[in-house]
Length: 220
Image 1: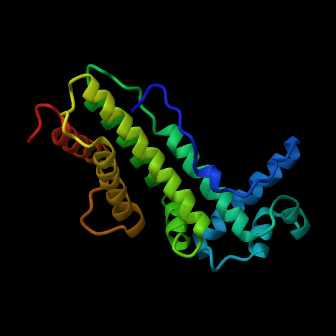
Image 2: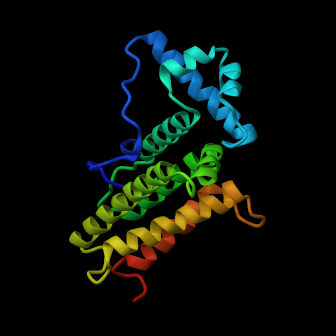
């Protein structure tokens, strides 16, 4: 929703500090490991996947695996951190002062599309976040980056006289962001029956609720 955004931290801040490969071959090998692991995790879950499964899928030796990662868990953290960072960057829509509703709708639609296309990674994150504090932190960092984006937009709306002065921007951002997140979880991870997956319509409805709840001419 913001044209220029600076965040003090990202999901990658929860990652163990490891220098990335310097050569093109090394980067390709690391990428192959991550891609193979994602497929394996999607097929049998994190707990059902062995390092050997990953290396066999990637066509690599165990020695090649250990040149880039110390454990299956480190692969998990790398996949999730890189994914959440990329989702945040790709779901940005320029702020339009003349039509803040457009910014909300487009950002929501991009977020939902990214979620739906990567439901396997959200399923993986939810499988592990209760038992792994670093996965928990990656998800929490990513969630609050989105919340801060919404909060900044609400504050800009207040400054422009479009959002009611009494609105608590931080609290409203968490509530508004949580609404989109819970919908996406129900639709794409749980796959609840009766939940619409027409993302254009869902984005329209969510943005209407957002704007209607905080705008000057919305309900008091």
